[in-house]
Image 1: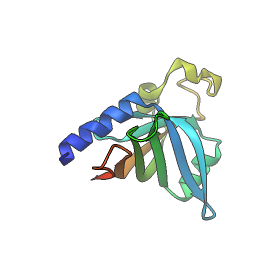
Image 2 (image 1 turned 90 degrees about the vertical axis):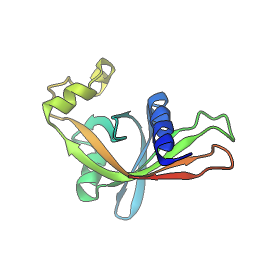
Image 3 (image 1 turned 135 degrees about the vertical axis):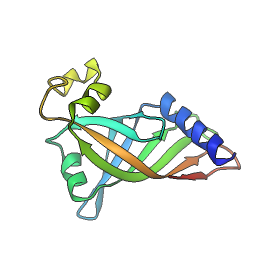
Length: 141
């Protein structure tokens, strides 16, 4: 698969798999948690959260993150992504409006909640895993 085909395949996996794990680092120890993700045409990822969380604090200290996305439990041939990148904390209303979904009301007060932030993740490398003999394949951003 060439790089453009790989990018499109990665985008499809992102579109079909909205829940994954986000790992941050604090004191040289990893912390992982499940998150919901959206992405844009550049494969930049966006995930909503509360400003008063460990992940926001950890990203302030160290912006490097790792994400696992995909894998439905089918076994060999069930592709997934390993994404390494850097996260940026955004609190501008445009991005908050874009990412907001009403199901988030359980955790956040609303689009205008001052504690509602969006993590914007810029991938540095994305590895397509577990899809036959041709994987892993890596897309460098």
